[in-house]
Amino acid sequence: MSSRMENKSYSVQMNGTGVHSKPAVNTKGLNGTGVNGKGVHSNGFHHVSVNGSLYPAKVKSRRLRWDVKPSEMANNTLNPIRAIVDGMKLTPNVDKPMIALSIGDPTVFGNLPTDEAVLQALKGAIDSQKYNGYAPSVGYLKSRQAVSNFYSCPEAPLDAEDVILTSGCSQAIELAISVLCNPGDNILVPCPGFSLYKTLAVSLGIKVKLYNLLPEKSWEIDLQHMESLIDERTSCLIVTNPSNPCGSVFNREHLQKILKVASRHCVPILADEIYSDMVFPGCHCPSIASLSSDVPILSCGGLAKRWLVPGWRMGWILIHDRNEVFGSEIRQGLVKLSQRILGACTIVQGALESILNNTPQSFYNKTISFLKSNSEICFSELSTVPGLNPVMPSGAMYLMVGLDMDHFPDFKNDVDFTERLVTEQSVFCLPASAFEYPNFFRIVVTVPEEMMVEACGRIREFCQRHYRPRSCDSNDLDQ
Ligand SMILES: Cc1ncc(COP(=O)(O)O)c(C=O)c1O
Image 1: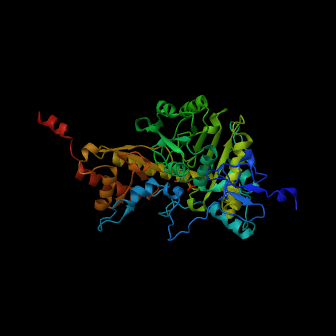
Image 2: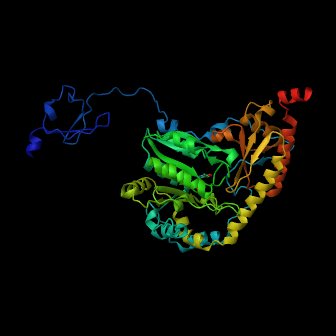
C-alpha cells in the first residue's frame, strides 16, 4: 500500500458550481479544512474514497414519482417560422388548388431538377463502394481540396485545410456561431433575416441583436444602426448575401462599407453565402472575403441551392484568416466541434469533386434565368396591385412584398393577411413576421411559371376585394 493510501487519502469531486480543486491528500484536505460527519468537506466538496467507491455526501431521498422534463436547451430552441405557421389556420378554398409560394425548397414542384452531371457524380460515388465508411470529422481531404480549388481566388486564396465539410449550410452556421461565441455574448443578425441564426444562438445562450435592412435601398444594411449595436460582447456579425428572405445582393461598395465597420470594431464576420453566385445577369456579387485583407471571415455555403439538392445535406465552412486573427485556436475549436457529430454524408463527399468540376455552366445559367424571369413576372404583376409594394430581387430565390396595412383594415397584420389569402385563394406566402419583419410577406420564386402567373392573379383578386382607400384619402375626395 502506498503511503498515500495509508494516509486515508481522498480525491475531490467537482462541486455543484463546476469549480475544480486539486485532490486533497489527507483527511484534513487543503487549507486545513476537515471532513465533517456527513462525508462533506467543510469547504463544500463531496469526497470519494480512492478505492473507487463513491459515497454521496448526503443520502438523497429517492424520487417518488416520474418527473422527466425537456432540457432548458430544448425549451429555448424555437423556430419562429414554425411558431408562426403552426399557429395559422390554413384552410384552403376547396374550389382552388393550393399554390404554396412559401417553401424554400427548389425541388418540390419538380420543375428544377439538378444537372445530370450531379446525378452521375453521386451514382459514381455509390458504385465505387469507396464511400460507405466514416470520413474524418472535417471531411475527406480530397473533397475539401475540391471545395478550396473551386472557391479559391487570388484575393482570397484557400487551401484544403481552410475547408470544413458539414451537414448542410445549417451545420456550418452552427459550428461557426459555436466556435466564436460564449453564452452571454451577442451576435448581430440582419432583419429581416434567415431565422436559423436566432434559433441556434438563443438555444446556446447567445443574445441576438437585429440590425435593419432598408427596403427602399434594395435591402442594403442600415450601417449606422448596425454599428450602434456593437459592444464589447459582440462576438460576430452575420452577413447574408445574397439574402433570404429579400433576394437582395450587396454590391462591392456596400460590402466594403460593412467590412470597414467590422474592421473598426474588430468583430469577425460569419458570411452566409449559401446563395453565392445565384445572382441575376448584370449583377456582380464578389464574396465578402475577396474584398478584405484584415477581417477574419467564416464563410458558410453548400450544395443545397445552387446545385438544387438541399436534401443531400452538404455544406462547408471556408476559413478566411489572412492576418492569423483566428489563428490555430479557432481552427482547432472548429475541428473539436466537428468531432461532436460527424457532419457531411460520405457518399456526397465522394461525389463532391466531380460535382464541382463537371457541372456545366449552362446548368447554372438556366437556373438563374428561370429565377430572374419568374421574379420579373411576379414583380411586374404585383407592382400594379393596390396596397402591395414588391421589391425586385437581384438574386437567390425570394421576393419580398410590402403591405400597406392601412389599406387593408380587414386584417390585423401580415399573418392575418396571409392566412386569409389561403382561405380565400388557396395561395400560401410566408408572413414576414417569421423573419421579425411585420407588414411584408415573402414569395418563393422557384415555382413553375404558370403557377406563378396564376398565384399573382389570385393575389390581385384578393387585394382588390379587401383594399380600402384610407379615410383621409376619401376625405380629400369629398372636399
Ligand atoms: C440564408 C440561408 N442560410 C442557410 C440555409 C440552410 O442551408 P442547408 O439546407 O444547406 O442547411 C438556408 C436554407 O434555406 C438559407 O436560406
